[in-house]
Image 1: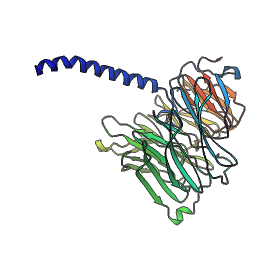
Image 2: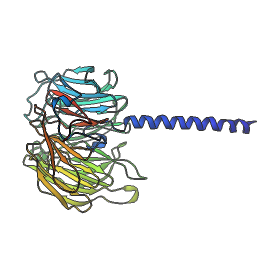
Image 3: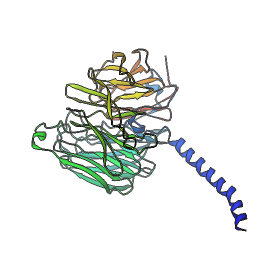
Image 4: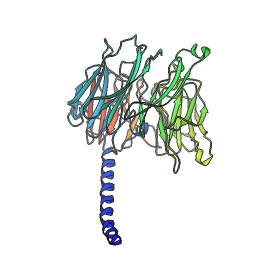
Length: 435
């Protein structure tokens, strides 16, 4: 009898398993083209949208909305919702908006009191880009009187938890963006007199681990060179543990266990500040550093894997016409470096050989994104430059004026390009005008 019941249960169990798998696959498919953090999935800057325009006019936007206050943070997207932050220039108040992706209409708005401070001219009161998961939107902000990480319900905007991180002191002010790995929110909080990397439980906001070091007097004398603005990324080697990859000012690149903070390996590469984020494709990692004079080093790295007893190593080093603020972009075995000066170069990741270079007009503090074989980057004056991606040559496809300054990186989700200027957000759908 027991054997018979087991036999009858097998088809039911199998059917249930298939249903669960289908539901998971559908959920994954719905999230496949989300843009859940600074520079999208794992900070890659790469999306799958097709038939994206080379040129367009104001009539081609699905919508264009005014934001309540200025900001340099980038929009993030989860399914049918967009999230963006602003900061009041007089009061420092933090404003988080959830917008309907189809219409641009506000779904909810949340405001937090914050202290104003003397702001650097190249920063804003809302520069940190939010991070998302299925349940929450995570935001960070800070200043000399205190810095905060908070989680809001993604659907309603209800505050779920808030964690105070202490004063943030740096000449260029607050700006690093958080990211999610597994059940953990990672917050970079390196500043002029201390280094701190914080891991918070994403459900409760409780500290899981913290790496903190008060800097020595001689390091403090360098003033702001210790401040890190780079957002970490994740390396997932086959049949090995996930690694959190961190680029840090005046240190270099390190790999940590995201659950415990234990160091896997470290490469001391940098003498300067890490602003552009580390980025990875396959088993190739690129990290950069720079100073007020521009980018100083871009290292192509093969990460170490402790389970295989392999050490990290620098494969290639690029040291000319480099970005300092814009994050590099890796795609199909190619490395794209887009410098503030408009210098753009394409490097073969395997050989380190430069394949082409050229110059776009303008100064660029946002980072490039790629989709449909095109590179998009926006100058500080709000002019979008579109280049052809690939090995062949530097090819300018178009330039479009957004008609307002910006330092924000575009977002791409579900076939739509989202541009954030100082006080506006606009949606450009695929299938727009091309020439």
